Each structure stands twice: as C-alpha cells, then as structure tokens.
Image 1 (cartoon, rainbow, N blue to C red):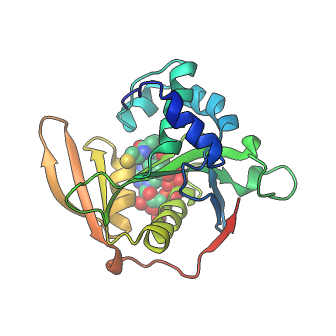
Image 2 (tube, helix red, strand yellow; image 1 turned 30 degrees about the vertical axis):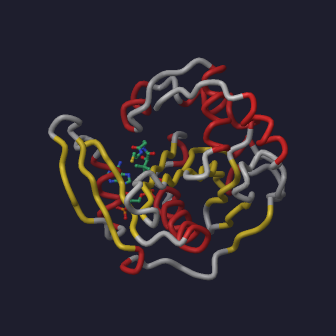
Length: 213
Ligand SMILES: CC(C)(COP(=O)(O)OP(=O)(O)OC[C@H]1O[C@@H](n2cnc3c(N)ncnc32)[C@H](O)[C@@H]1OP(=O)(O)O)[C@@H](O)C(=O)NCCC(=O)NCCS
C-alpha cells in the first residue's frame, strides 16, 4: 500500500463533501454482515489489524504508523476511483444497527473496489479482508464480496471484476473461484494469480438493501 502525501486542499474538499469525497455515502445490509462507510472512528482498530504480519502478507500491505493510516484513510475517502466499506458482523452489533453510528464494536474487516485500469473504467479490482478470526468461516467473506459486487454494478456500472491473490492464499483463491472467478494470468515475480469474472456471469441478488448513511 502506498502512503499518500498530505493534501490539505483536498482535505478541505472532503470536509465540504461530508467525508465522502463526492461519491455519496451509503450502507449496504446483508444477512450476516452490514457494509458501512470507512470512517475516522474505524482507523485505530484497522491500524491494530494491520500490525499482524499474516494480514500484511495476505493483503500485500506495508506496516504503517497510526498517523500514516489516517492519511491513507483520507486519501481513500477522496479517491473517486476507489470505494471502501468496513464490514460489520451483525452478531456483534450492540443493540440495533443504526445508520450514522460507526459500530466499531462489530467491525471485522473491509472490502474495496478500485477502478484502476485506465483502459477500462468498467473494470474493478476487488479486495476483501475479514481480519477478526472469530468472524471467519461464517460465510461473511462470501456474502460481503457478493454484496460489494452487486453494489459496484448498481452504483458504478462495473462490468468485469478482477482479484489479485497470492498463490499461497488458498482460502482466498478457493473463495473467489467458488464465486465464478477464472484464472486470467500469473505473475512469477509477485507469485500472484490474477482472476477475473464478467459481472453478468455472477449470481448477484437484486434489489440490494442500500440506505443513506
Ligand atoms: C479469505 C477470507 C476473506 C475468507 O473469509 P471468510 O469469511 O472466513 O470466508 P467464508 O466463511 O465466507 O467462506 C467462503 C468460502 O471461502 C473458502 N474458504 C474460506 N476460508 C477457507 C479456508 N480457511 N480454507 C479453505 N477455504 C476457505 C471456502 O470455499 C468457503 O466456502 P465453503 O465454506 O462452502 O467451503 C478471510 O480468511 C481473510 O480475510 N483472510 C485474510 C485476508 C485475505 O487473505 N484477503 C484476501 C486477499 S485478496
């Protein structure tokens, strides 16, 4: 993960856009999980997760200071080509889910899409992390990827999804292949498999339950 330079002018823009970078601000409700905007309140816990060497390796990330993590949060919020949600495990939410409440007690991971192919703005790279071990193996990862892809089709008109996964990350490879992603290429340098799937070959469920944050 690259550490962005501080961008005070852009930061002022974020305040003006209500911390959404002009992208809008939504939550997405699933059966097991809720996707909520990545807020400043989530950063300290996120930073704790990213001290774990196994998670750093699985997500191809570098360890950052807390200050750098806040800078990354700010840059993700501003980036019009990136959309990040924090994943809440519904079983861990204290009381009822309430839009506007960061529910840090229930945050267990994150999911991103990144429209990073300048030749194809309808292609999105997708990344998922269920950092909290207690919330793994419950079907949350699978549900979250499907929710995020349905959201990306609906809000960004995405037509193709791509995932880059380390060849040693068997859990993630199995998950993406199970959902219909096919191997597209392999990088011997990065020891990484690139998988892709056209959106119209996915079993996405509509309508999504999306609400204003
Ligand atoms: C990979 C990861 C997202 C899976 O999340 P999860 O919520 O535990 O996964 P689910 O419970 O939804 O499992 C869905 C499917 O994924 C696969 N899977 C998940 N964990 C697995 C494991 N430990 N071993 C093998 N397959 C696994 C299985 O196919 C499973 O379906 P099944 O139960 O019908 O066999 C999670 O382990 C994780 O975040 N790991 C660290 C970060 C990472 O690797 N991110 C991916 C980088 S692209």
